[in-house]
Length: 313
Image (tube, rainbow, N blue to C red; front, side, top):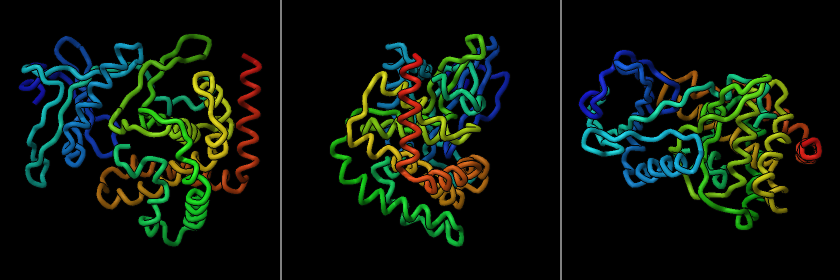
């Protein structure tokens, strides 16, 4: 496929982590690395959205953001719709060859926090929609915690969403979508942002909340993450009163979504168990800990830490 579409002769190929798409690292005869991305069949149906994502990558790259860019096919297309039979009958998939960004996934650097969603259901404005999938948690004590989070979210966050600042967000800034490289003295800098398949027009604070939630998962001191990320965020965009008041529940949101949707999607994609349940490894403990501490205590720590970082800087 790669030779036909892109004129690239492959000498090495290996799989890369993905949720329900297929990603491959390929190397050509000159040693140049690329990432071949094959979008899942459902996501491939929205060609317009895929084109917007692809052009967004180019726009960000042109403005200094270390993002991948799509390479043109031999006929000049930045994405190609290909009919492929993966063993379940022929279906149409969006294929893109992307530039390769060197570095390590942020998830591999547990203490890095101080250096710093492809379905509409994954928007934090729709956290309450996980109610319809909660049966996958039957028999687990965590189900009651998630139910309580949903109820508070509906009564406390939903009425305030209209006041949140809005714009285009990445939508999935987790530790697997941020690439870092060392710059000396044990410090690292962000050298790449991956996977814009969840690009959406939504609330900016959702991006902040998701980033805090996912960075907590791999940190040995998860509650230390919030203040560090909040400091960096507010150096660019200050939260308004409603956003600050809702931050605690907004951070719980993606943890609940990942735990529930991970279990739900496991039924459809059992071969991808390790990736789908990655949040469950530490997410259950973190969600429980944050819920037991309560909104007041968690937010006090985050905002106190943030003010400390700001003063030290």
